[in-house]
Image (cartoon, rainbow, N blue to C red):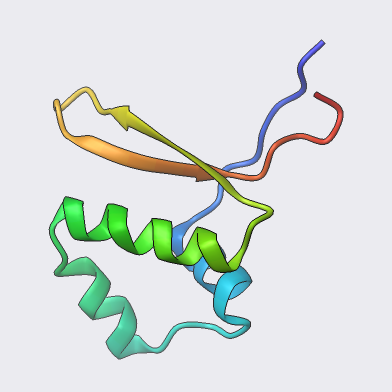
Length: 75
């Protein structure tokens, strides 16, 4: 049986990858990125935090989002 997977914020991913909280300026810069740029940033951070995995998923708005999560170890 597959257990639930946890939801993580981009900030959680950033902390795991960079080992620190992001600054207010970094948070504002992230909000101003296009979705493609955000997707690339997720890829960059997951490369530094390999406990996360990614998958591209289309949202109900038709936009491609790079989802990220830590797999449930019981799966």
